[in-house]
Length: 179
Image 1 (cartoon, helix red, strand yellow):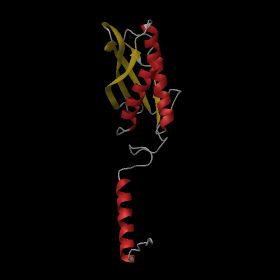
Image 2 (cartoon, rainbow, N blue to C red):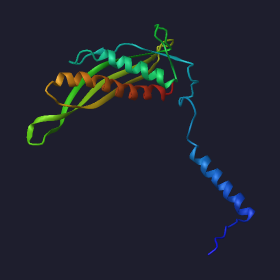
Image 3 (cartoon, one colour):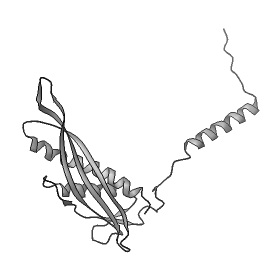
């Protein structure tokens, strides 16, 4: 059997091409290149201060501030100001550190295997020149840790994971906001 190639009429070729362009264009219609809040990339700067820690967990402020700074540097919408001259100052308060059991040992309903760890933080962003509050919102960071013989060590290892989750959520609020 001989195979035959199918040739479309030139009108159908043009029509098919137009349909493909329209479909491709519609798929990209909501995409925006660069910052999503209308500000030119790098035109404003952000300063991240150490957050006040009101929790019973020590040494959480530094990983939180470090993760937020790293996130802003990585994202690129705003320049990171480290000399106290940022256009926007980000501060906050670590309100609550909570640890709830989520799974138990298979043959022991008392011994916890995994914990859900949450850090509740009040994040505040203020425009330095006007004092205008740009953001004042509670953000909840969370991660899961496995219980082992040394729960304190497991929680210390979870601190950077909590800080990264908080930084991701808080920076999204700040970057996508209407500054």
